[in-house]
Image (tube, rainbow, N blue to C red; front, side, top):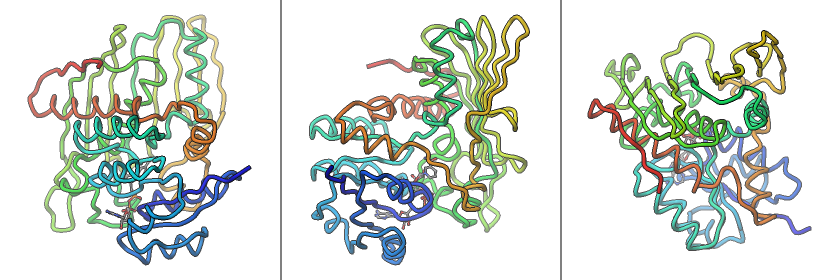
Length: 350
Ligand SMILES: NC(=O)c1ccc[n+]([C@@H]2O[C@H](COP(=O)([O-])OP(=O)(O)OC[C@H]3O[C@@H](n4cnc5c(N)ncnc54)[C@H](O)[C@@H]3O)[C@@H](O)[C@H]2O)c1
């Protein structure tokens, strides 16, 4: 079988800890090269993972790469992705998809126009406990979903990037803070678990504590608190934080008429089902890695790269298709609007 030729643009943390190792582990892939504005980074990944270090994006585009991971900073996602799609490449773009509603719509339209796969790296849909929980909800194990609580809170991206003055804190490059970094994962997860999109959001996005080395508060949100509703009447709470200086919290609880599913809430059991009749089933399909685990060299295949490759090779739709991920971005933009105007924002389906 002919191998899929892939390349990566943006050779920082997510490229080196997830994309490149997962491409290398996939037997149907050949890595043809890397590009980064910092050529030493592209060179270092090409020496470790194989392929060449391209000296420009045009060189990458002119190469025989059929599929490309976009792992640049948020502000570049849309431009990189659209340029690659127009050049006939399939694209896996990191989250958040882009920084404006218009950019997100354009990306989806361009993928459709070019007939190429465009997936977004919302990896929480592939954690084993989340996949199992979705099957249990569909099977009716907790009856009808009524409400939920979901949280993603860690000490902040400076631990991940190793830089106190990271671009994640700069509004002109990141556009949003904790809500875009962590919140998009969680709203997308809720869409996946409940099988419906969020229809309204009431949010407060704040910069409470996170400071630059100069002592000034960062220019993006470091905490977000949202009340979310779905068309079927489910109501839930989302908390995101870059100022959790204790143990990372990446948990979700779904409350239903017949029981409760708790995900990554118990350190020894990533999935706990508590039934209305008092039965408790504890399982441990996987252990979710924290940022610190990954920085310490622990690798866990997220399933995102394998999904991208197989969606292309089998020419089939994916649960990571941008046309689905865009709903999480609509929630994100609505949360910012709600916070700015102090009111509930309704999100309309196209
Ligand atoms: N899925 C996840 O859970 C997850 C986790 C971490 C980061 N991310 C996302 O991945 C993206 C990258 O994050 P990171 O942590 O790897 O950041 P990083 O700063 O470590 O890496 C970004 C790299 O992109 C390069 N770059 C910037 N602009 C470029 C351009 N125009 N052309 C080529 N290269 C360019 C930089 O030089 C840098 O090497 C972000 O959008 C981030 O939100 C996703």
